[in-house]
Image (tube, rainbow, N blue to C red):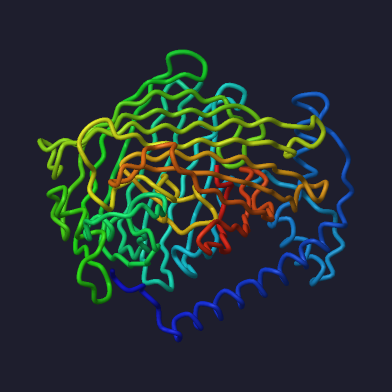
Length: 446
């Protein structure tokens, strides 16, 4: 059995110092803005559609308002405040922390714009960022989700170039099923030994959807994923990556995963960053194709379902939200680094409470429920509590839905941009096997 990968004490100490310093700054910053927020008189205004929605929006308070109020206080500016049209673009430091990536620093631009009338056109969103983490991860990406006038077409996709360092705990759900095959035991990893895989990835995907009826779309697209210089850090006789690659015939150092996608989507949610109501459903058949340069042929069905219920007409961010994400093997076998699992969704948000890839299999099922509630009436501060559960199959006979692993947590939200409902999210979550950690990021997990 391979030994656990243990980072040096120096790296752990540095990471702790980085995180502690960031939390002190964040606490000081949000405290100042909370004091400034008390100057705003709030009224319940969501009663009559358009007129009251505008009145309600004017009484929201975000970080931009805080900067202006603090600046006016420092300058002793007593002139009448003039409100201009709020920009839907946020430029900010790309600061993050979670157990999977360590402490992250970089720059990020996120934005939202309507390409048609707001009553008939969904918000189009985009994000681009460049970042570096204390685990040696370097990522540059651009992503977008674009809706044309009256939602007739939807184009979504992105480009990623990254040097990745990911923690690896093998396949399955941490089963203790005995086996007399040493390689399978290493791959299933019942002791949850930790390995660290490093690789470079070049990824591109794009999907085009056509509206069939209000909220319903069908589409198709392509994906190209090139993984290079794959290796496991440390000295081991054998690793889950090598065992799986030998069993499936994949090159453990370099391979391509390219193919076609066919999709069906149904979308009625009112905002992609922080929905108060509505539904989002996306079903995708991903087909890796050797004729497009893929190492092997495989077919994977992915499902993404999200439902939001607003629990108050006067405080609409009082929300109950549900999320399901699944990936089911139809035919063939994916490469080890492409297996679905914890944190393997588009934005690596599922499975708070565990590091990315902690559980994985040929097929994977995940569900989460989250309760979102306001703290301040101007929505500058709000909170969440959440719980999730996940299951995967493995090579030792455990079937999907046979073994489950739970996690739960709570978090704080700081309204970063009220024009796009962009929140700064601070969550603490815990799972089994001693897994727990702080998760920071922009926008809701789902």
